[in-house]
Length: 452
Ligand code: SAM
Ligand code: SF4
Image 1 (cartoon, rainbow, N blue to C red):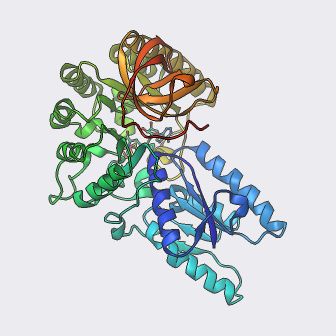
Image 2: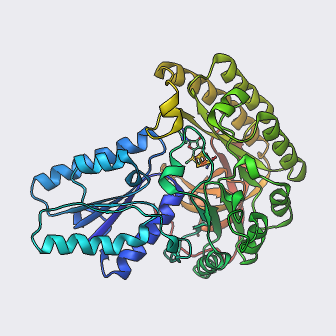
Image 3: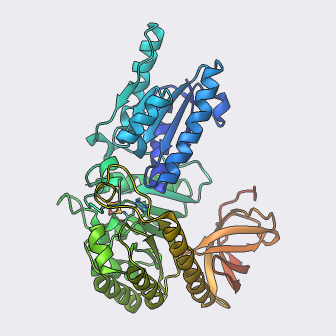
């Protein structure tokens, strides 16, 4: 069939989409660039908050209309939403043909075959469901991205063993399983051979890598091994404060390719809220990790995730989050209003706060973050940073890339002859980006035309 995959959500889903696509090609299906040319459309979904679910529902609504108007189309719901009762209900409502969970990606071909067999036999359409957590997925090798891709993702572990009360992920992605070191290094080497300059190691809690399996190394050892593959840059996300041990900080400090950039979600500054969220650390422990990071990596860029308006969060609790901001001075933060997810303990046990309370607090936090992001970014003014320039910016005037420490960096497009790593002298900082000019270019930068 001519197939098209639409990806929603996080980088892990982008990585999973590569696996889905490679399975489709291995099964003799053709990938098409546009959904209108497809006979099979697969939605690789996200269910972490209500908004991404609404987006999926909106696309499914459009596709249902096209089917009703006579288009011969098969629709597959994949990813986190597929694994939930909520997803099954949506699939029923919108006439989805295939329901395949994130642990069953390698079941996609048999699912399509079963669908085609039923269709060819003239049977009334009934949905094909594949929702196991398959063990072969951890050793499965995902092919490298297309030639010319500068940033590559490698999932190092799947699932999550934590039980944060707001979060649906443990249900959708199952328990933690570390991928074998050999599989990770195989994918990393293939990427490097393909010209990838920056590899990002992915997992819900990357620093738990290896804890489920004595046969695989620790996360700190893995970081060093991946850096040895020869990438100019190694990044990783997401770290959990619970197991963020000193050996990981040492590996970052001692391994030149591993970037001084740590994304360490705190979620709240209030111990009372952290307890109700079932986060397994408290404010003081978080601050200890920050102190160790800054002592060993003086230039570290530290970012975080915050949930505002968790059920029962008082003004006093929220004040503690603001105070934590002032104490830590994060370089950047992903800030979310709490979104009640059916199937989570918080949804079952706690009453949601009024929407206005959540958005008013979110607005205040965003303002505070802007202030600290500007302060943090200003410390780079006048300095040289290494930037992986990847594309022409939306304004058509700047080329855009990311620094080693993950700042968005813009340089005049007229200066950029090639994509790849460049040295940039920073002239001006805003809360969201650094603006500068090229100071030097690595001569083996990837030769690609600057395309929009
Ligand atoms: N495993 C990572 C951790 O524990 O830090 C994060 C993974 S989660 C998919 C990404 C972020 O989404 C979380 O850090 C949290 O801030 C946010 N999130 C998860 N569930 C949420 C909910 N119900 N409402 C709002 N934000 C949520
Ligand atoms: Fe969700 Fe918590 Fe697991 Fe992160 S650690 S994926 S927030 S349950």
